[in-house]
Amino acid sequence: MARKLSNTVSDLYAGMRLDSYLFEAGLYPTRSKAVKQIEAGKVFLNGKEPTKKDIVNEGDLIIYEELVEETHVYLEPEDIPLEVYYEDDDLLVINKQPGLICHPSPGHPGGTLSNALIHHYGRENLAHIQGDDRPGIVHRLDGDTSGLMLCAKNDEVGYILQDEIRRRNVDRKYLCLVHGNIASDTGLIDAPIFRSDKNRTRMQVSDKPQARSSVTTFNVLERFESGLKDNGFTLVECKLYSGRTHQIRVHMEYINHWVVGDQTYGNPGKSSNLGLCRQFLHSYFIEFQHPCINDTLSFMAPLPDDLIQAISQLADRRIGLTERGHEVLAAYQENCGITEERESFALV
Image 1 (cartoon, rainbow, N blue to C red):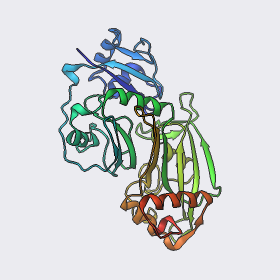
Image 2 (image 1 turned 180 degrees about the vertical axis):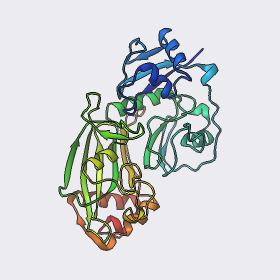
Image 3 (image 1 turned 180 degrees about the horizontal axis):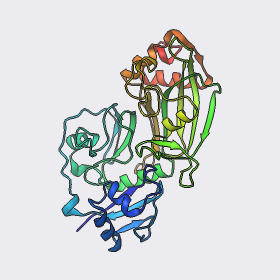
Image 4 (image 1 turned 135 degrees about the horizontal axis):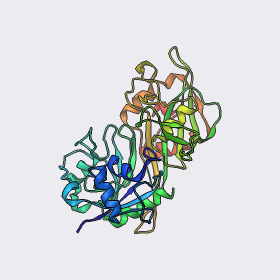
């Protein structure tokens, strides 16, 4: 019997016809197969039977019946190291290293987090709510974004966590170094996002009717003065109140403070990016309600070595910490076991 799988539409595909989405998102091998499945009543859009012409929006929930004979994927286990922050019978919290793609895609058939998970835990001990090629995956981080993320060991917990993320009940905060000095200590960016007309892998702030509401708040933690080849830098803590693709990166570009090292939305020049070849964006904090033991769990992950090396270059250019910067740095040092008090993120 074919299994029923779930899929949540990302804003990368918002505004697309359902039959086209099912094919382009890889849920079915051809558009004609997608149409047949829709007409056979094997696809549900937000709990209702759709037509092939229905338009999908970001956040829409699709329940679909897999084509076992055509979509079966055998994912090879690969001995890729994982940094596990928490583990029990139901879920994992991992600190994803930069450069690790979450699951296979046309350009990345292997070497992914999914390959690593089945090596360490076995495919039968992981959730498969997003298909056999995405075992354990509940949500994603960009390949070049590091930090904390949740993985599920069974479908029941996977569905619960996925729903909690959709409802914004999972608190995720990011450390982000941007170009320039942001004047205000706090900020709210309320700017709808839609995919680019020129490049479908790139997102942009848009006034199109299909653009999705996107809200990011930030707290400035520390500022660094300008140098010969730059206009200074600002370390910020970002929090998402919506989960659009590339949201932080798009919103920082929108306010003219693009993320250091961002090859898609920023300045690709290494000299002004502190030598980084990937964005300075790290999911450093996560807090959520455990779906089984009813406890609130929170975790903090230190900056990885490449980001530490980048920001340490600014040690002699620090202007000072904000009030929120002092709070976060104190918690960060305690979490990292740093007993000697530091005066800057550039000195940790």
